[in-house]
Image (cartoon, rainbow, N blue to C red):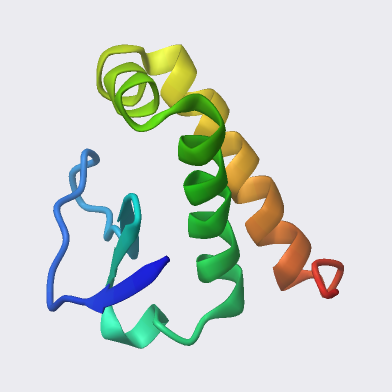
Length: 90
């Protein structure tokens, strides 16, 4: 994973800020979240999902299949919450 700090990221939701976007092997991230372990853990889940599913398969489904996108994001947010609650160490 290569972190790339960027000043702005697009969001699919109006009025919400996107903290990071993974386009494997790169993670584009707002500077204020670049040291946030929970955010990094969330993006690492996506890196692993891409590795497991393949780049084209993952991103095609992410862009075209809302159910798939919700599913992989749920996995990312679960890991993020784990780290935020102190359970994601080790």
